[in-house]
Image 1 (cartoon, rainbow, N blue to C red):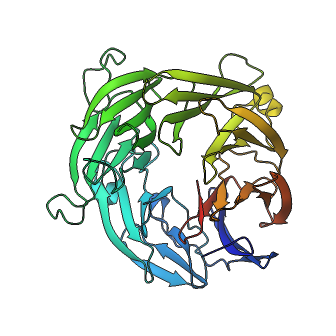
Image 2: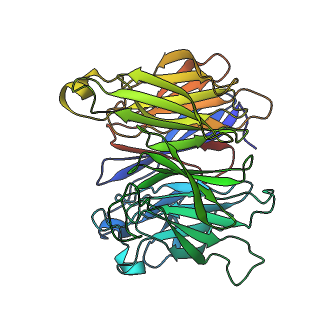
Length: 418
């Protein structure tokens, strides 16, 4: 188990064409950075370039999206890319999302014109592909009730942005008839908001989904409608719609009683982006708190281990004056111990992220405040923050050039985040 003195963190950085991987290591608080050797271009196109999975035993673990073969190598293919991935709680299984072609949302090799894929991989040594499933047309987000959820079947719910739907996937290994099969598809169409005459596709544009054990419901943010769809995982039906504008994602509180939406208003003021955090009570369905933050594009947000703090990273959006006025070198930390209240603890100066996404990672430490890792893609650096004092204790160089794409690998245990 990694601890405060000994840990490793794998960072992927890309420019849209090629990528690199650096491994940041701490050995009794002595921090070092190792850049993985870069190999040749794979010769593959688009979606079918090698998928970077992680680092295991000092080797690069990657997958061929066509053959589904996993390989270990001393080098990273120069054009390998990192995909959105979701690790199952208390499991070695990781769900890797394939959004499909940017225009069509289809993975034509694996699914033809009927959608794109989710690949479930075991990160045990040796790694293995468990299954590739064709779902709807991407972008995808996934969530799943835990094994401890009362009376809820073991299933995974995968949202399909371009279709406006959710693919319900069997996730109980003891049920051979449904295990890792698409059981049904939930249409997210709201007839009152959507004049279209088809159930799927529609204009829901789902992005952001959580399951709450406190209520036993799935919550899916429909960006196209500005609503949260409340879904019963027993009947796979939409039961309720909660209004929530200016949000692009959802995050569940540790106790499952609240979801927090984050988003940005780019339309109200041509010179300023206004970031927004919205706290919704899952039991009542009421919006309890709205926080507007001038000149912030909230990129990624996560709670610390005990849920007492909410960390929000800054990144870039908009153009011209809006973009130039943005705070692109800040980390916002909120007191979340008394939700639905959110009180700003401090704004921490980190490095710059002049790109659309800046993730965040935490070191798992039992009974202690974790170390917090915030990348600065434009600077090619990583800020390491002490979770007790919320101060930057190290800023280390991890790349020689700016990146437009950054991802942490959560292949191994000990690190969590997004």
